[in-house]
Length: 137
Length: 335
Image (cartoon, rainbow over all chains, first blue to last red; front, side, top):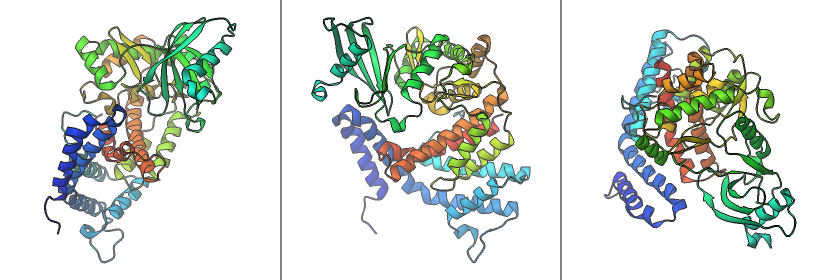
């Protein structure tokens, strides 16, 4: 285990340097890139704190959806849904949505709600406040 | 040595030939600066003294021909057609397809003063209370553009016979090639298919990228619509949907049209100027263009990763995909 500062604390230090000193010191054509880089550090700072929880919640949500669709764990084998690779769970849902066969309206609503919950969690990392109720699409 | 002499000398030589000036006739070209607008194209601002058209102009230079969405000569032609029909577009006074003059094809258009940078533009607009006026001018401009007989469009621009089907096919092709599965896009595509409108009765010239960031505004209101490189023949409602995409509001989320004003104002102005507004098509295109921009951001992340265009800005686009996916899904429910 690394000694402190933790990853989030180091990213905070780098972001602070970029925001406080580097932007003012670089020529104008680089300022936008430095601002973007500082924002990426802020995103990663939140990501180190929230991503594991978010990914676990998304796995649970997707497994519940497959349960609701009656397809259970499509790729079966020994692992249960909670332990399966998130990418393959997402790929399974993409395959079901690409299939033009109609979805039960309850399932369809549940899929949308689950996807929105995941996107809200992603946005809490990538752009806090974006999914606030006032943010009209 | 033209490279040492710089672009003003190359421009002067080219303009002298264009205007067939006598050797003794005075023509002075003075480079004023380079505009920041436009990520890919250079915009050289220069003053001309002497000759038939003295004044301030912009040379828009496409660095290499292979990244052109629409060729510079075709874009110049679309601009002239739109301008002839009352759309505010800077007048084009020359087109050059010889890449050796400025290092790429270019056209020269009149310089229009005013604000283009989104946050500064919105600050000016709201300080002066110009939002509703500008949205009305945008609605009227769209109606004029969409009234043009598409036979006037240059033959080289995209003109699919089925703009709705072509747009659906294009987003489908992109989401099949994402770097990782994104079920929100698949859900949106499914909705788009199930709610697909008929093909438009009348295909028209559409700009396809009118938004805060591609317009010039000053104290008098809307001065110009810029960046016609995406122009094509398509469904007019695509233009009205794209200008309402949340990304172009720059935080002024309650003002749906580019952070400037409301959809009601846009619709009223469009209809009053003869445009045929269709709520269903508007809503469908809102979902489509939102999702398509999400896939565009995903594409920028891919271009960074595979080295086609490595930059921290392109890399950061990957962390913006969720914004578009979220908006697309929220729009699907918002009706």
